[in-house]
Image 1 (tube, rainbow, N blue to C red):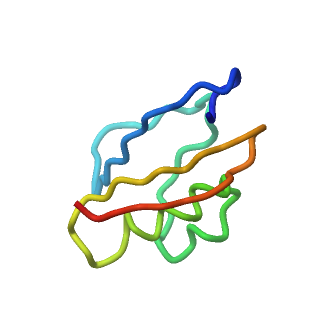
Image 2: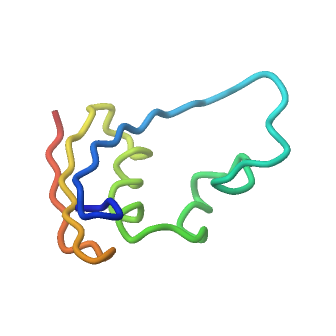
Length: 83
């Protein structure tokens, strides 16, 4: 599993195309900013993020289900299916 003690995690991804308000000045996960989709691969990402993010932003509107086993903090494999 992905968690500190090897537990499995279930995650959800939501796409936001706009917002209103004032972003927080600080965030424990890092600085929040809008980034062009084309620049995402240039960012420091987990190996797993590099696998599923292309599915989030491709032209296929169908949701997907992915399985990404980790061991000792390293991704072991990646598989997905479109729903």
